[in-house]
Image (cartoon, rainbow, N blue to C red; front, side, top):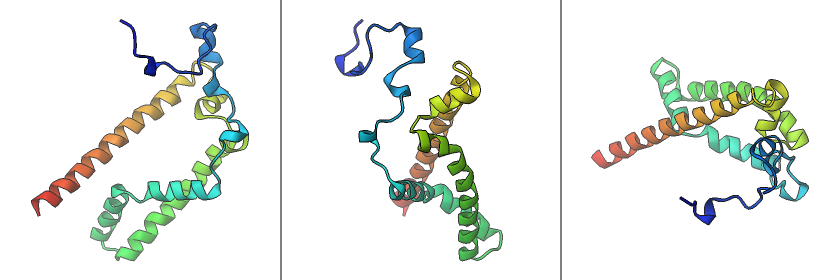
Length: 147
């Protein structure tokens, strides 16, 4: 059974074996200057947009139920996000400085084959959080439709 042509990657080098392609391909190269489109404002806007989601509102509502005022809960969450952002920025500095991707950074710590663990772990957690967000969004729509 042949795959449709749109499933094939255009930039794959045909003369490399599977093992060679695993070690060297276009996705593992540093990002070229022409493709570096994001500046500091883009990163700040991305993280702000990522932080304002239904989970954040659930955390804040749980803190309010615990006895704090809404603005104290909001402040606690943003302080927590700021502390986490410091560590995220530190761990992402190598990628931002050398313009390399997460799998390449993982290879420097875990080796070529050991780097599969953090990549697969990150992929799995992305699927889990997508499911959590989808379920919570569905619950919001159920509430809207019932009212």
